Image 1: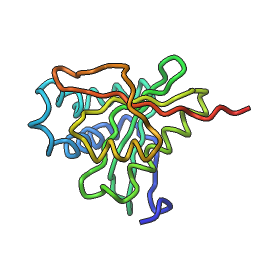
Image 2: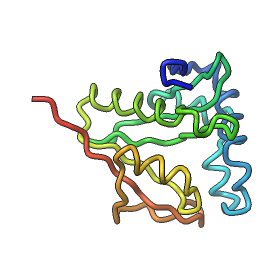
Image 3: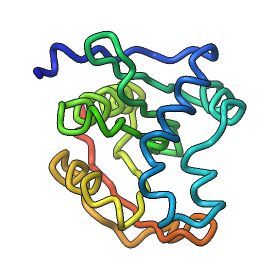
Length: 162
């Protein structure tokens, strides 16, 4: 599937339950590797997702008209922090993750951010490979855990416009 066949659109509060389902379904296979609190924070319910939509942009990826992934971002000083990135198992390897990261990067650059930051767990090796292929590098900065679940932080420098 080409990236042109993937639609990325901004989420609305009415999409919160769909996003919560995508997050849950995307991470449930890894649930035993998370602490209870870590999983709850990674796959928040509808009310918490609705609050995220108010804090910063959240996007949905649709493949052939079907919701297949999500990502959200928020500005922290000169950086955009990516959170809540998830691609359903049935859509992995289809370009959805690449398209979502590109949308967040484009948004961050338009908002004058100098870098993208994200935190992930060391056991999400496919996601880490995607991030590395997209230009992210591991950094020593924290956070290093999420309610007892280990985390690593990754960063991507953004090109500055002249």
